[in-house]
Image 1 (spheres, rainbow, N blue to C red):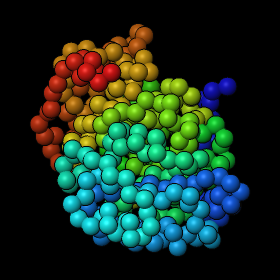
Image 2: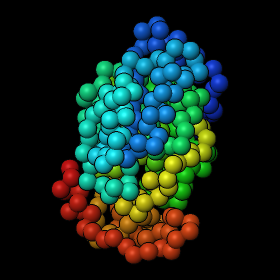
Image 3: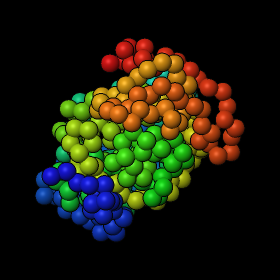
Image 4: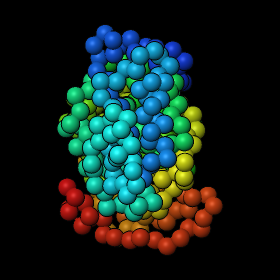
Length: 318
């Protein structure tokens, strides 16, 4: 039986648990294969410290990892070399994104899913100032506690980060009220069961994380998703999600997933960011006919719109 949003909130929105690292270690000892992937691009300043802590500073005793992977998105510094020196497997995953943008895309995630042998895989960005192990382990422990869970997402807060709060959450709430319960759908921190996620489509742009949540809900219901409140993330540079190109791609990825789920139909010319209430047809599937530029970055002006024919975009992508 599918969960209602209210029931999901009470059962599937979790706080970080201090005993989570120990529980993850025990599960690994009992035979569950745990893997960790760090997305990296020009992260020589942080990658070595992260890998040392993952392998030798795990608070639950012996590190639980059967795989430690650095997915390099085209670093121009010594990130990959440092990762190898610390015993990590480096997967070279090229990216056409701007050098200032260290976000992953769905193509890279698809390669990782094909490569990994882990039962539970933790995914995190390497440009975090520090890795909070209690929160990270809580994502993995949540999957141990919820056998139906395919995807556990790490929310910074009950309202989420800027991109989630001011763009993606309103979009999801307008089209799929059930998904309004997701606090931070653009979070780059998540854990998943690779064998259960390989069957899901992946948006091929960056911002695939939010689209993956939509696809998971569409195919398996809310019970397949858990969210853990992991606390505010601190970046060694700016949060890469506060990048207009990433925001734009994230919205396109979510719209693609909503189309797959039968929740919207593309129609006409588009700008980007947020649908206005009058743009929705109340009968049957939602008909997207107009998008407006929305100043999701609180310190910036609205900026210029990027427009395209989304019908044509969908035809090319699907």
